[in-house]
Structure formats: structure tokens, C-alpha cells
Amino acid sequence: MPRRIAVDVVIPAMLHAVVGARKLRVEGGTLAEGIEAAFLAAPVLRWHLCEDSGKFRPHVLCFHNEVNTRDMPSLDVPLRAGDEIVFLPAISGGRG
Amino acid sequence: MADRVVVAVGTKRGLFLYESDRKRRTWKLRGPYLTGWQIYHAIIDTRRSPKVHAAAVSDVFASTTFSADLRAAKFTGAKKPPVPPKPLPAHEKFFKQWGISRAPRVWHIEPGRAKESGVLYAGTAPAGLFRSADSGKTWEPVSGLNDHPTRKKWMPGAGGMCCHTIQLDPADPKRMYVAISAAGAFRTDDGGKTWKPINTAVAKYPGAPKDSEVGSCVHKLLLHPAVPGRAYQQNHVGVYRTDDYGDTWNAIQMGLPTDYGFGLALDPNDPDTCYTVPLDPKDNYAYRATGGQFKVYRWNGPGKGWTGLSKGLPAEGAYLNVLREGMSSDSLDPCGVYVGTGTGQVFHSSDAGRSWAPLALYLPPVLSVSAAVV
View 1 (cartoon, chains in turn blue, brown):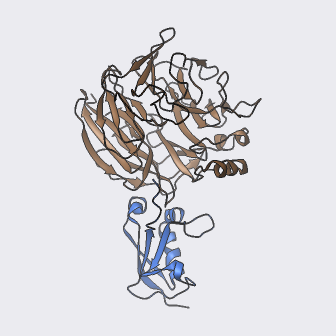
View 2 (cartoon, rainbow over the protein chains, first blue to last red):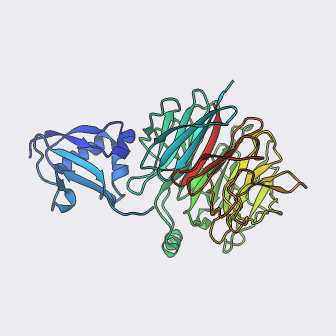
View 3 (spheres, chains in turn yellow, blue):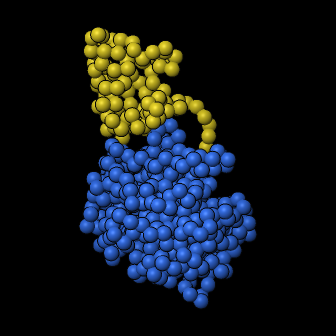
């Protein structure tokens, strides 16, 4: 079992007033556990970031440091000291 | 004595607050707040120390509500937002056929009664009613409406299927009203446990379910605060007034250039009047409806017809529209009337509509306007 590491989770600017913080400090052994810990620390985050299926909403991005999780085969990668989990709105669309 | 007038303007890109003194000649802008969010509706809550509440929508994140003390304007989002009911299969087909958004949205937010200072109500799309007992931190569904036996016959309109109106009877603490497009108006007399469709004598929209108590495309409904049982509605196919709590409605649109419009405002000092902006049903603009002159129309009471109000409003080529949350009035005498447009203008009158002036000209598309005296 990977050792539990404390990492920062960066909240999108539009959700600062929802979560009440710009960053959350959470612990987890893997990236998947870190994301889940963020959802436990601020349950409303899951509502804003995920669809009912549990997948991220279409225009929500999650980065592990500088790697887009969409490009990762699995979220079961170990966390290391100093890592960041960053949620971002995708720069996409053009509607409206 | 309350000495300020505040106008909350919800736009496609955030919330703008305008403040003036009782003369309402000059306005000071505060904001924008909640930038990035589409503010479908924002309202000033004058119970105790003034607050502002907003129904916020995003193309990226889930829809939610925000609240703040009016003076500090430091907003807090709901920790447990309203979760709108799922669309029915017939709705999904309609959304796909017409390219209409199926996104769950909080559409309207309304303060509760004066004695329940932490109570708020929210209307959503797909249509649902929600209640918060903790000033918007958490929301619970009002199942008496959300699971209504007629729900299978409710249909969306071009904006989705939204619960856009929540009105609390000022005299009876157990009576309130909601309006849903396109289902109709509903009234509860038992604090939200049961809801009676109140659409008798209101014309149905084309294709509405026959032999049903629902099937009315009400665009906005307002209770008059001074006369128990009196309400007005701007419908897809007319303007109506009731004097018996919605049990029956009388059409009053005769004399308007079109039956169609969205916005509605009342004069708190004159229960016999209402204001609307007629639009052309073909394209939602006022241009063809009023010959290029942007006009607000005031109904002057039974037998007195409508007056087109245009002094100070754009006179030529005004392709303007006004959405269902886009009109408001204040409680001063003469009342202020406020109209926001889909192209970012807000016009105001401080003499009950006789003359108008721009309050703002270059905002993002205006989704809602709501005035209060604080």
C-alpha cells in the first residue's frame, strides 16, 4: 500500500466561493485517493466537477502536476511530496 | 426609513449591483460579482440586514445558488445545491429535436416570509421547487410539487422546462404560487404539501395536452402585494389577471400589439396596473411588434386599456428583447420600473413609466433585473 502523502488540491476560481477556499490540503497514497479525499473534504466539489456517472464533466480538467489525467491510463499512481492536484475549466467552446 | 434603491442585474457574465438614493437620478455601479457565472436571477432580500441571493448557471460546473450580505457582497455558494429532477423521455426527445439545453439549472431564487429569515425558495429546470432553511447553504426538494400527479404532462419550452416563478401570499402563510413553462401555474394552500393547477380559462399553447389541468405556457406570474387574491401573468398567448387566487383568469391583452412577451412588473401603489413588453412571437424581438420603437406597455385597469410608454426609450431600429426575469419595480411612490434587455441595456423610470432613462447600456446580455428599497 502506498504511503499516504499530504498534497494540495487547487480549486477553480469560479468555485472559490463555493468551497470557501482556493486550495485544500488532503492526504492520499495515490492520485485517485487524493481526488477522493478532496471530495470528502468538500462534498460539493463532486457535484460541480463530476457527472452522475462519476466521470469528470465534459469541460472539467484534472491535472496531476502538469499531466492531464485524461492522458493517463490510470489514476492509481502514487502521490509524492510536493505534488499538486489541479482542477481547471477547459478553455474550449466559444458558445455565447 | 429605507433610503437606497438597489437594482440587481443578472447577466450572462456575472452580477452587477446598481445603487441610488430615493430620487433615482444617478446610479453607482458595484461589481461585477460572480464573474464567469450566468446569473439567471438575483434578488435583494430585505428581511433584517439586506442580502443578495443569486441563481447561477455555468457551462462547465453545476448550477448553484450564491448568497451574500448586500454591503460586503462576499458571496458563499450552496454546500448542498438544489438537484433538479431528471427530464422525462418525452422531454429528452424535445430537447434533441429543437436543440434546447437539457442542463440542470437553478432558474429563480425567492426569499421566504418575513418571520422565516433563513428560508429561501428556488425554482429549477427541469422544473422543481426547493426550500432552504439555512439561508441557502443546503436545499431540499418540495416533493408535493416535484412529484405532482400531472408531471408527466408538463412539457419544456424553448428555454427548457423551468420553474421560473415563486410567489408567497403576503396574507396567508400556507399559500404560495409557482409557475412552470410549459405546464402552467400552481397554488398550494397547505404550505407546499399539495398543489392545485390554476389554469382555468387560460389559453393553452399549440399542441398542449387536451383535457388536462396543465398545458399553459405561463412566462411570468406576479402577485399584487396590496390586494389579496390578485395576480397577473404574462403568458405565451396573452396577459391575464385573477382576483380569486388564480381559480379563474381574465384575459386583458386586448389593445397590445402582440399577445406574446416574457417580462412583467407591477406597481405596488396601484393594484390596477401592470407593465409588460410585447414581443414578436416569430423572433422574440420587440422590433416588429412595436414598429422599431422600444416600448413598455402599462395596463391602466379594467376598461382603461393599455398605454405605450416610450418617452426616453430607443426610438428607431431597436431590436431589443426582454426575458422573463427582465422586468422589476420598486416600492417607492411613484414606483420605479426597470427593464433589462438581451443586448445589455437596462432602462429605468422613476415616475411609474411616464419617462425613461438608461441605467446601463453596455452590459453583457441581461438575464434578470430585480429592484428593492433598502
